[in-house]
Length: 450
Figure: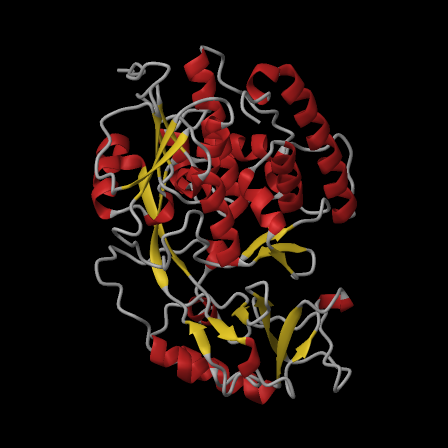
């Protein structure tokens, strides 16, 4: 049975979740003249890993990924800029040095999003936990940290297609406590000096590896089973795959030269700036579920971090997503509900910008539904269209959250061996298709309230 829209055209749309996707969705609807009630349970109730009451808080890395058109992530950002994404606009305003990546001062970024959303008259922010959904019109953008009560309600709505995995957060340290007599600035292959690098000899790596393998992890409490997203594995899990697994993963030394020896280290730990002032740095790829006391002990074995002060320890939290090919239609709408859309990481995408893009898509489809317009079918050769294609066509039995990547785009008419040139070709085609798509749907993409 399909639910019919239950609100009049002048009734507010319910958006549940004030993260990246929910904030983006609220902005996109409001700029088209639609009233919105944005529900966020913080500060009344805090989910694991959250620390502030601000909208669009970044709980993991402060990097939104590559910003180059020679990368899939850069193509997606270019599309989002063309679509007037609030999240990308705020990220551009508060970016910090990170080489080719778009990284932000996380607190200034969240403050900017909160300020802008709060200033829009058509958006009412409601500080309240939503524990149950009976119907729409609504956009569910509760993200991977959906509350226990709402998770139970969603399980009733989606049935056996509901899945979950576990994600982890990397530690953040104070820059002034890093020993720069040992550590050094630099990026791979000499591309800038945006990272702090801590080099390790073979003996130092072996000592660190053995300590990590024997370190105690934090209890999982009510977690049903241990499942991880391959793209965000805890460092202790990677280490269990073999002695050199870290050296081919987050501690790979390829492309890095120690200026003191002019040689490539045996292994290296990179730290990336986490705030605009450059006082905080996060340990790249060091997501972890180790006990805090163990992080203190093990990570101080890394040369250059012997006396480091942790501003935030790594933590692990439960991430939730739906089996999109089973429970969602091609427009991110919950099957069986005509006016309930899902958005953000909970739909089965991985990454800040991917999640934001799904908030934008859900909002535009909701707008089309309210206006009696056909829901949007995005061009497959765009990054957004490729993500939506994956969510619709992936194998339900092995479905896992996915970042934007070259494998999602349709095959090229001719082979281009050079990856950079291949990306640039795809980018040109994607942005051209998006421009044509937006012109063909001017009644959707021309906002009523600029």
